[in-house]
Image (cartoon, rainbow over all chains, first blue to last red; front, side):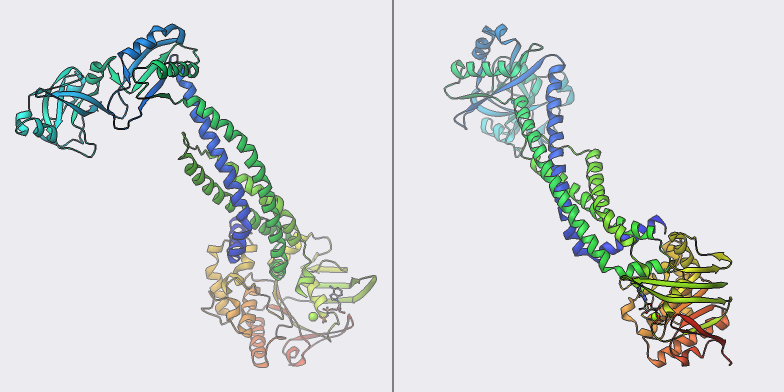
Length: 393
Length: 227
Ligand SMILES: Nc1ncnc2c1ncn2[C@@H]1O[C@H](COP(=O)(O)OP(=O)(O)O)[C@@H](O)[C@H]1O
Ligand SMILES: [Mg+2]
């Protein structure tokens, strides 16, 4: 019989006994799924660690210290010029190249502004590129040119404009001062969900902010420095003497250490889970063998008929072996799918993403197929060895 | 076509060796319709199983189309069955979870054909046994006579050298038996099919051309039927 026909014949018998097939293959699915889950997580943490290390191999390495105010509503900045002075005083002993206060990465900052002679705390939207999200009610949007040339131009919200001027148009072409730099108001925008008051170019703002204030401190170290140790020292210095150490805390999230920790946990788990999965696959294999033996004895008549009309013992053997391999192979593929889903779900709660490779699929498929061959060969041989005369009596 | 010389067959039962076929010699030509008669346990099925390449353990000589069957391998036997013999059994021997068409087409799959290429052949052979339009049904959904006709269709589909029928009407009522026998006679007359049929009913055997009587493992008589 042609191989494709053998394949369909085997598939068909499996589908005839659907429920039994599914129950039998469950152990394979669980075993493969758990191995794939842990392998994908292990690969994920490996990749993240590698990326983390690569930053250092390129030479200078940097870390970030964050300031968190105890009062969540506070708009005060945690880092000031005095903090830079404090750190720079012992710059050499920290192995530091430089320390910079940077604005928050999320593209907005809290700042003091002076509008029409009055002071006001405002939320500033910092643009790296022109923003098409803003709906301009009057005047012009900030253009690419404005940003490239670092023009001190600003857009203000309609709410801000109307609270300081008698009309929207009155506010156009006036100036606002943010962080000591005066910006020309070139447009009025409609408030959006993010509740920004003013939009200005990020480059201009950073320049003005230089050494002034912010909630993030970027530390750049010399090559070969133990950055996580040095950063820890700086953090503890800041928490003792920093400008705002009484109103909040300075913290550093050490990605390298976190990844290392998670990585070693996953490594340990990999052995444990692989061992359990191995046992699970072995037991599942015995289940497959048992089901195949039952199937062979239930289908004695069918085997006899097939032999009588011209099946060779070899093709009977192949049919039953294919049934076993197909069963476990499908279990392996299903387990692979479930494992991928599970790894992805778990990595939502971890600081990296799971990585699934083609080799994981090949591993899942070949391991399950091998289980099928190993545990299917004996029942299949029994099927092929049946005595035709006895069956047909 | 079929030539048996001093065929002997023993069955081992515990410590005992039972001598089932004793010095059986016979020849059957292409196109013959032979009935094998004898009481139950006389060795008819044993003989027919050897003729049909189901049983390779015997003593003596069996030549098929001039070729000795003695030193053929098991897979040679499988191929001989597939290409040369059409079996019809007393209890039909259809595979229960395959459709009628799949049952009928199965010998062609073992002959190396593809499933998708055999539909026409299956339909043709089903209509030749007057079973149009039942291909999609399961064997269980048919009557006994219809199931036996499915089995005959399956036996015919590879255009075998001969048909072997072991009490083909044993499980059927007399009316249905007549229909099946008529089918055999038609096949023998119109298609010149060689048919070897085991029966213990003389009324059935009478319809063939030649009756071989077996008693206790020996050929008791071998004569043609005068019409
Ligand atoms: N597999 C077997 N093992 C032992 N004895 C058998 C076997 N098959 C048949 N026999 C014996 O061989 C004899 C002939 O059997 P069989 O050919 O089936 O007779 P028939 O078909 O004429 O009724 C019987 O006595 C039977 O008991
Ligand atoms: Mg018999």
